[in-house]
Image 1 (tube, helix red, strand yellow):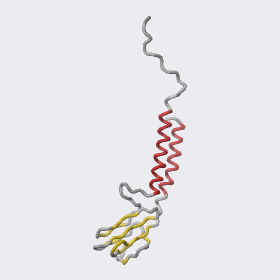
Image 2 (spheres, helix red, strand yellow):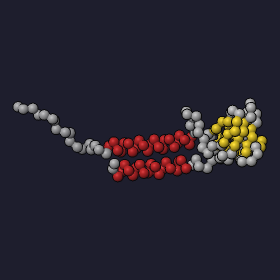
Image 3 (cartoon, one colour):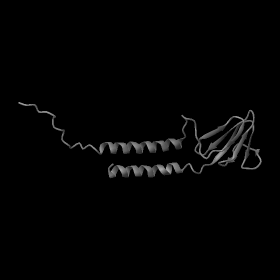
Image 4 (spheres, helix red, strand yellow):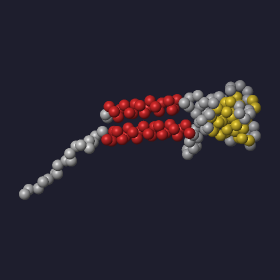
Length: 141
């Protein structure tokens, strides 16, 4: 691998790291979609309201015929729609084909960097000024 290719890969990684670091601190709020929900930070469960801030690891209890959603500041949503107790995750993992704006940007940073690195590595072994190879056989005359 040439020094230029290694330098470009290092620059790509340097720019991708801040894109992932943005997800570390997020505001999370609760939206009650139907019925009621209760929350707990380790003690007793108390009634929850729409717009209430949630903390990572906080418990959300969903009752029968109830549903609520944790909304991250990135716009990503985690739905709690079956009865049970849920823990608020530190990162939002949308459905397989749903992507938030932030995750699209991160994906394109990585894909773009990989394409640049691949192009440089692919071109590092060929020089357009090299003459074509001689024929294998000139034949006896």
